[in-house]
Amino acid sequence: MNRVSGVFTASFIPAGHHPMILLCRRWLAFGLLAFTSLAAQSAHAQLSIEIVGGAGAAIPIAIVPFGTEATYPLGISGVVGADLARSGMFRLVNTEGVVPRPIRAEEVQGPLWRARNADAVVVGSMQPLPDGRVDVRFALVDVVKQTTLVAMSFVVTQQQFRITAHKIADIIYEKLTGDRGVFSTRIAYITKQGSRYQLLVADADGNDPQTIVSSNEPLLSPRWSPDGTRLAYVSFEARKPVVYVQSLETGARRAVANFRGSNSSPAWSPDGNRLAVTLSKDGGSQVYLMNADGSNVTRVLTSSGIDTEAMFAPDGQSLIFTSDRGGTPQIYRAHLLSGQVERLTFDGTYNVSPRPLPDGKGMVFVRRDGGRFQLATLDYATRQVQVLTSGPGDESPSVAPNGKLVIYASEGGGRGILAAVSIDGRVKQRLVAPAADVREPAWGPFPRS
Amino acid sequence: MRNYVLIGLIAAALAGCSSTPTTEAPVDDRSGTGTTAPGSSGAQTGSAASGGVTGSGVGSGAGANVLRDPNNILSKRSVYFDFDSFVVKDEYRPLVEAHARYLQQNRNARMTVQGNTDERGSREYNIALGQKRADSVKRMMTLLGATENQIETVSFGKEKPRNPGHDEAAWAENRRDDILYAGE
Image (cartoon, rainbow over all chains, first blue to last red; front, top):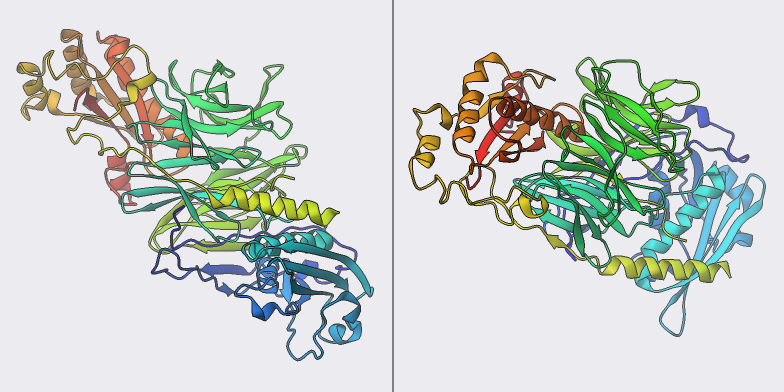
């Protein structure tokens, strides 16, 4: 595997509620969390993340260093704390000077932590086992109600510390917000450095970036299979757009759409068996369905103009797509069984790149307002459009699997960067990688369970 | 019990990550540099096998020279478009007509029309817009006597800008079709 330097991190900011945390939600700061990673010199250098500003009035939580944690090169509590803090939904409470340091739930003294304004406290331990593995235990204590919300144990190797920490952060996040966490997910994205394009996959916090494809020709539109084992993407290596599907486990790949003309915009069906693609083989850019291996190509939409950027609705029953059939690019929805097509966007002359929300009730898309390209959401039932970002060059949104955060391509310092915004538009962060244009982010699915 | 499930999950996830292989895409030259396209895109495209045109058919004779003679309009290969438009402007009609005539007179000749857009807007929508621009030129050429299978239209969208700038002059230069004959 190749590791590359200069990547970044991503995290999430949900808007759920837990009865314990009624305070301050409305005061959640809109702070821009600026993430900066240092240019790494060696191929194996770890990236460095710096949070500047943030949501000062989020859920106050104390993450106490786990017992015997200091004896390991990578601790658990630090990663858990970083995940939660980066989400914008939590504020870390200082844990220094608490003696004796609590390790188990029953050792947590509520009044002491309430005095530090903590609502929740996380404690844990790391016990080495004879076989070399480590018994990692943690507990989440509600110090307002004086109850233990969860206590769990994981027997893992040291190599599994980081993924275990993300798992613990996911559990804490879900307990306190009611929404499933996405700290254990991965993201894919494209970098362009000079004339070199790379498709990379990294943990959601930017760690462990791995190069999946390298090319001297453009790469775009990476799309995760629903089970997270394959990526579909578009490559220009044949001097034109061709759609590939590549296994992340074996690296084997196949040109699934390489017809005369252009082949682009892959999208997976929710069951992972089919792809929607845009082909020009029969004239114009039109949407087709095919099996994931490229067989059984059938045209599903017909217009005299452009139809592209099709995405399946979460129930697989309809496609949302961009078309200029009405004179300007707008977003439509086609019901696959009935063939019925309805227009979804009416405001403005350029609405593109629809991405369905996982609850099936709306979508994220890109709109042009004057010369600015911004992200917005559309609620299907109310037809309400909410603008999420200000632009000027925001594009390629991808919704986290819990529907609470959108990662997208933006601009900063004269090059492409990734950014993330909460689905309610209140919390934003920038994800900067030095010396490379970063674009085309795609948020992977929840880990298989 | 739940812990064991989690442990299993973690182990499975790690197993999945640890061997992620990398693919090195076959490297290709930028378009129009005169090299043959390796593994040319025609692989699965049916009728229009690439090559076999400029090389032997007309290439060794006057044909190739005509296409490269700077005094011949056939050496002009770019058609420019207005913002958000795919209409071939009148000033490019003579160019398109000349290439259509060449294709009509050289039935073995094959060309690719590559559509391009400026950097504004969705990458995928721009692929479709560039395709529409390439299709416009193709349609005009086929109306003028070229045959369907002589011309493949493809799009680079905004991915391969000729001018890397971010102003109106750069954008105007990048809203463009390029004409390449097979083998070029």
